[in-house]
Image (cartoon, rainbow, N blue to C red; front, side, top):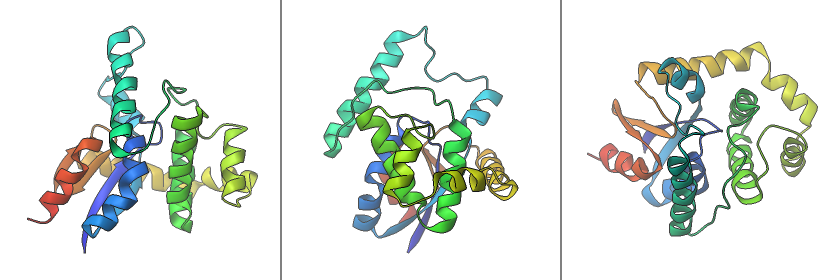
Length: 196
């Protein structure tokens, strides 16, 4: 089975589309996505890149409408705008790393995005994080403490360094055979390339 690295940051708006459909795409195409939460925010700051500045309303409004259209095209929905940018960006992604190490990570990421884009509940803050933990039968306080551990932070930084080495500049990004495919709309391109 072909493995494709899936670099993403909870906090990236278009990543909602990818995490919502990725399991179905994976099964349909018989590939394996390796989920790698990283800090796209750190990389974008290094590039002095502000993706959707508040003074560029046409671009921001286009993004929200585009996500709604694309979600509808995939067979689900998004109710935008949603709270953005995230106030607990790093914590949201560190919890994802913790969960991926313990096998509830994919459920956590998908549920966090669902609540964010369908109920306008920002990830990794209360009471929203408490709701997610309750639905996943997790102890919120323990999860936060573990997500802030040295081991998880090092893992997060390592994923971010790996993204840098792969010349990744945005989320979601798919890496296969040293090729980068940036954006939800490139998921299938990455799969097609993997089968060459």
